[in-house]
Amino acid sequence: MEKEKLRLKQRQEEKGFVLILGIIVMAFLLLLMAPFLFQLTSQHRSTDRSSRYITALSLAEAGIERGIWELNYGDVTVWSGDSTTRTMTISNFQSSAGNVIGSIEITIVNPDTENPVIEATGKVASGNPVKTIRTAQVVLKRDEPPPLFEYAVFGKETIDINSNALVDSYDSRKGLYGGSNVGFSGNVGTNSTTYGSIDLAANAKIYGTAYAGPESDPATAIITRSNALITGGKAAIPELKAMPSVTAPDSLTFKGDYSLGDTYIDTISESGEYTSFRLTSNAKVIISGDITLYVSGDFSMHSNTQLEIAPGSSLTLFIGGSFVQESNTQINNLTKKPFNCVILGTDSFNGVMQWNSNTQSWGSVYVPEANVDFNSNADFY
Image (cartoon, rainbow, N blue to C red; front, side):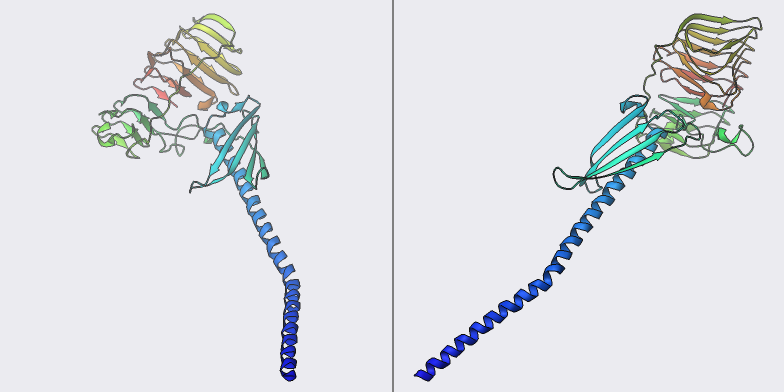
């Protein structure tokens, strides 16, 4: 009996010893694993932090790209701020799958100068209220003003291109029109969707693509008659093109009527508002400096008159009444750069804009409420 008790006691002592030994081994293993587990946790935090840094930086770079696009093709004047600093915030920027990635804040300093500065900040949530933030900044150089328009010709309604008329393109940065400086980007478009929205008469040519209005059938909306040519084919624009109203500046000095004739030559070196502007009898007006003119009434150039834009100068002309450039007249833009002569029509300019026979002009025109007629042998660059 006593032997049996002794054996039982020995077994209990052995079990107790094994338990203690197991606890010691587990404690030892935990001591060994603790640094490894801590390292895994640290690596996870570091990887997560790096991922958020990269995401925030990518958002900032996307903001820089958005700012550059807006300067070239958009309208930063609708952003918050003034002419010296413009800002825009893109909240809840989403991935293609619809997941919110973060937000972007874009600031453009001196957007109208030759060297605008874009600063963009990307923010990624890291747990309320902490955020991961990265900022990028670029200083831009404006080689040339961006194209004013996407199309060589665009209309709200129908466009008729008469016999032997030609629409093409060139790059004014490479010199004058002609020779190798003639391209195939002379696109013509309209918001109209009806039959004959664009109508090319015999031998008319478009060196570019012709676009009818959205959801139209280009085959019937765009008509090509005998020997007419469209090098880029026919298509439909995806949506109506906005043609917003033009508002004339209200801060110009009022100068009344302007009339010049009898072979006189005059120089305009100050901006101003005129009730009418007339050139007659071989008169010539020279624009000197960066000039803005607003003619609320009639603008007319009679035969053999010239409106000359001097080298290094520019003209922005707002028309509120009517515009006629009669035969053998010239808007002689000596810079030969279309963006140095811009003609804009207000809502009250809703008649006909006429360029008659043997006229020449270099410039850009936006008259959303007027009809435009280029007659025989009129050249518009």
